[in-house]
Image (cartoon, rainbow, N blue to C red; front, top):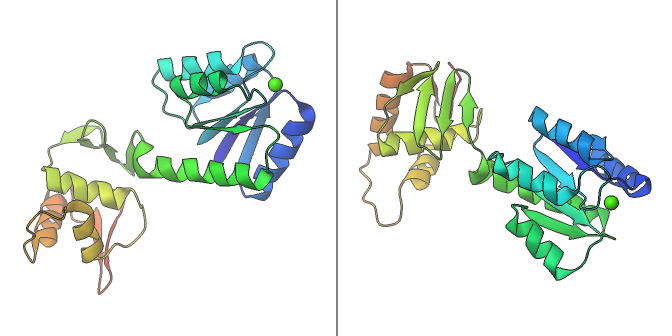
Length: 219
Ligand code: CA
């Protein structure tokens, strides 16, 4: 996981970078608004830790620009401004969470992890596995750039598998993921949907691991 750290205070920045690196994150650190603006346009980050008071361009403007171009990048505001109004403004501008300075480094790392988990759940704009791309928001699937028409259940099944690439999910797990409490499930419903998905996407897209379950393999 790669993080962008935007913090102009050298001492705080160093401590944050060290703490996050120790926790296993790759951290890029910039110390002014303009550098942050450039880095954010690269679009390679999983999350940004954003100070509000910055030379060049302030954090709130960076955040507003990010959301204006519909970038869903998780933003954790890290600021000394403990005024309630600033926090509300940050959250309203599209921040996902905030931490007030001085903070506990372990708590900071925990909050970063929580945001990344949340993103892996529903915040991800596109799911990709090889040539297969799924857009959970638009409910569209593409294989090698060509749209594939899927039923709602086929889409949900594929989405569940693609959210955990490489993981083997049991039939029961898949069933639980795509059927609500109120829905009647036929005994071989999941198999039928999997069969149809393989027919549409190619026989090797979804592999059966005998006795365990299924996993998605990028074609
Ligand atoms: Ca600052």
